[in-house]
Image (cartoon, rainbow, N blue to C red):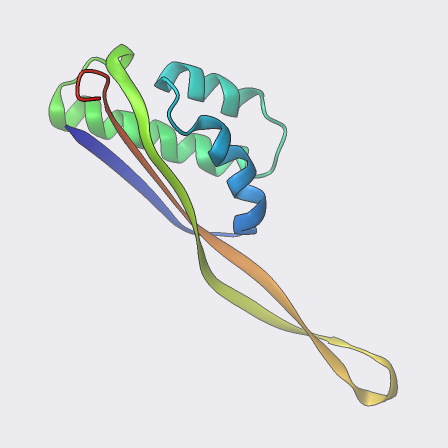
Length: 113
């Protein structure tokens, strides 16, 4: 049994979000929630919401005990980049890219491992 949750187009760089997602991969769900809740990074809030959604999906769709869940897979992929122009000297312009992320978290039973 695996339940998943996906949050798309989160306005944070994937490189910054991966720092926190790497910390929770393979951990027990309660431990992962504690790690994310105590983090002071910008990515903590959307990752926490995605993790809670995956837990709720497992609990409601598969009637699984929450204490038996483990973060099986956690990835942050790059979404599209918002492009903006910044004026520079002598009539030139630089492209500013605001990167977006797609967060995917899959939780499963400890028994299956």
